[in-house]
Length: 476
Image (cartoon, rainbow, N blue to C red; front, side, top):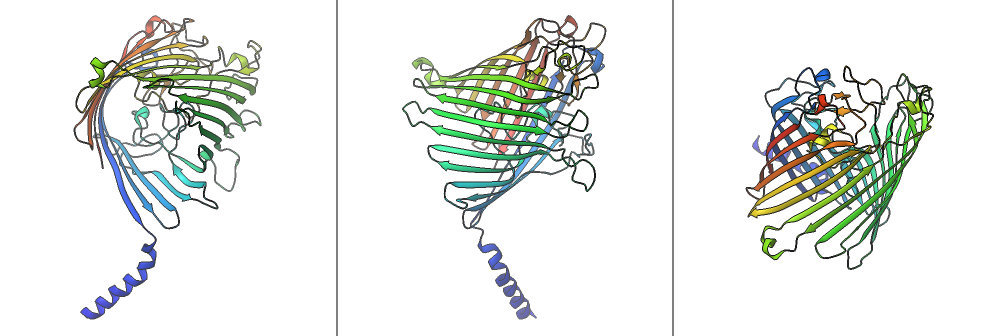
């Protein structure tokens, strides 16, 4: 009997050998991060919609597991799993039925290198990608909202869901690299009946050219289009379309100074689904620009602390009254000039980033970071915000109604229309950060921030918002 068992095992091994022979290398990695979240007055004192002061105090854990396998003939695969949950809420589900204990498929793609010919690499499946400074395109999508997962309805701006289902082709003609991307953002109806042409798609081409000069200059140009077909049945026969060309340049004009500048334009069709609108479609014409500089301070007396000074200016155009421009009682405008945030992924973890979408504004940022002692990084940051064009606001006795009103977004996914004025000063935020590299695999840190509303808000929306985040992260 023993011989028969051994022979059977040997036969199974022979049969299985060809199936496993193609796997050259397998790597398992991941991380576990826990965060204590305390947030207060995120409604800025607006009691009319929140029913009281907006206050949160909870802990959450985010766990990611990733498996990378190298196969033969320049083929590799990646699978990533993700669980996000708030502590002590084992059976809670969000509005989409996602349970806290759900394990979601965050990454699942195949990479084919030198496909057809050597410069071409093709990646197919759910994947993560980002271009430039993530000012307009990042697979994480807008970083203050998430449609599902364990943090939906709790802390959507802190989610680690960072992927899109896409086909990406990379042509590497060094120093020129060209990326072609086709992504499925939302696939609404796959049934055999009903509206079929109702998806949200993202298409784009991104060309990156390294000049090879002494300043390490990089020039990047792109063209992206986002097509939302789902609105056609409710607001005419046109899709909501955003077409966006742009260019970014990064260089090091002097030693230890890096400067990047980006400019983008949006045109296409804006579809209005508001019930008060009598004009369903208007033309888009929006613009955005950003300049970022990072300077390693050369002062000899502070060199041991590795001080780094960062400054940034961001402009995104707005529309003074989006609703009136599309109704019979409006001002006669036939152009929508508000910037669509697209798939930006900047300023994550900041209060203002949570509350406000990246549109209709000017943002100035200044940040100083340094290493006061070994393995410790400290930072202080200031952000100032102004609106580009005045917007509709609610009266002092009730909230503004309609899509033309200014919208404020809460971390739990709800929105409100606070009482605002014609003043342009939205407010300013101060943030302090501290990170300790306990080991090369373990990081412990904290971040505190305060947002002080400006005169853009009426007096009943003048309470300062505060945020305290303490986290520990282990990578393996």
